[in-house]
Amino acid sequence: TTEIYTLSLHDALPILPDNRVIGPLSIKPAPALNNPSEAIRNAIQNPIASKSLFEIAKGKKSACIVICDITRPVPNQLILPEILTVLENAGLLKNQITILIATGMHRPNEGAELIELVGQTIANNYRVVNHHGPIDSEQDYLGTTDNGVPVYIDSVYMKAEVKITTGLIEPHFMAGYSGGRKVICPGIVGFQTVKVWHSPKFLEHPKAESDSLEGNPVHEENTKIALMAGCDFIVNVCLDGDRKITWVGAGDMIKAWQEGVAFIRKVVKSPIDEPVDIVLTSCGGYPLDTTWYQAVKGLVGALPILKQGGTIILVASMTEGLGGPEFQQLMHENPDIKAFKKRIMETDYFIMDQWQLEELCKVLEKGTVKVFTTGLSAEALSKCHVTPVASPEIAITEALHQYGPNAKIAVIPKGPYVLACLAEK
Image (cartoon, rainbow, N blue to C red):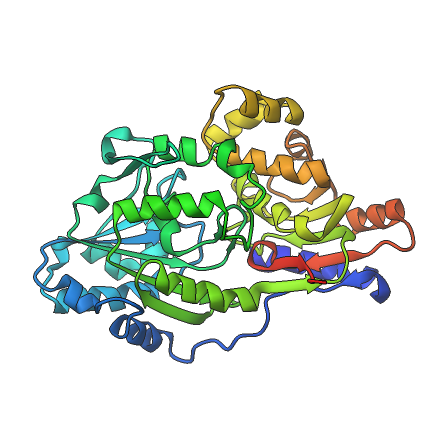
């Protein structure tokens, strides 16, 4: 999927005159680690602002390791063996260790997906379970934050004596950057928490966007929630465009994560001088382009460099269709995008996954969207408030004709992983 749809995007480039193209915008080169397993091992042995994991685990009788679900390309099969070795050296038995998949409100990852996440050996020898956010009885209630967010955290995690989280640090279109605290919230929180934390009160704030941390209420609130839940140790990585590890850090949930953010921020920023009329982008292939729900992230990533009234052309596979049943219900119930925005702002209407349609509203308030995919029919795509196109080439030709001979088009082959932005004056 990655190859097919990234190639489709690249194949469109030769039809463009060089003086009209900005980019391709991409992640800056950062050397991949020569021996990633050794680097992970060293990071765990030399943690940032924390005791060693061995010291933390010594004498404990239970541990929970949280990993991201299938929608995040975290190299779990490199990270987990290093963590498991330390825990067992500290005296924990295999049956005292649980690996918890942080699905958030996504579907469980089972069968072949579970094997893809952790590998056959770990799946056969350790307890690997999914978080079930919508099931209230599987969460512990920890209280309410000062901003009125009720905090429900997975009971498996809360019962563990040693709490470990893993993750990937990359730009995130609501929380500034992923990783660190985010695998806890929203990764292993309950529906009642997400309902408030992902409400317009937080998401409509102007600083709830990519690369924004200070003053970003989405980031600040999920940090508070993660601290309420507790976290003894993190192992986070950064990846390059080929998904090879370029940085690894371990230790304190906040300080180790901050070092990773400082690293990736220098790598992912791709500034241009002026906004453009057209942005051609994708979701970087699997796993972020398998549904329309996930593909919205590629659109939001293009907003900082798009002129008001411009056009985004998105290439995505959408092999799994629209998304989960709640998102499908949401799309069916809200054929009028402006009425939907009014509905969530002025009433108590709430359906799980509505935050993604809310983010699409922000895109459509700035410009129009054309989408090339083979995963959804043109009829189904038209109901998603975007225009289906037969090919990227046709969409580009139409857009260049619409905006005239001086129109510029920016190309972002791997949209969600690149921080497209305007250069500081």
